[in-house]
Length: 192
Image (tube, rainbow, N blue to C red):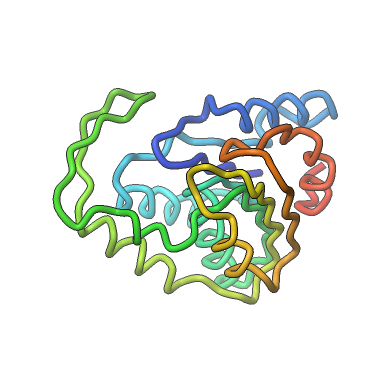
């Protein structure tokens, strides 16, 4: 199973997920290869979902964008702790996302699910604890576009400097023209 983790307040209908599904289908992969769940809004619930997937699903590789890139590093690290070698691809990943989580209770509405929920200091604590599980003894490919208007690509460039990386000038947070990298990404993940 190739697990794809979407970004903060995104959905399994994100363009990169659809592009990945289309590419896999065009290259003969079964419909069940890619799994892109709708992630909960709260960080503790996301972590619980991922821990359950780690425990019960045959994850062969992981991809994630933005906050999903952060969680991809978490999943790959947790699998490494279980002596399972799984590679991950991070696309314009969030680095230290707890730094932009609110300290006070903040009411939000998820733009895709219309769920009303709250973020607070507990979400920050969950992200800090998750990052403490990160292993540097994992294999990651990091794709960055310097034109990312939401996240400073230099944070990820510096944080992941020992990993395989592509930094491209221009682009934006969505990672413009992502499909041109799918052959290299899927070869790295060894899923086709």
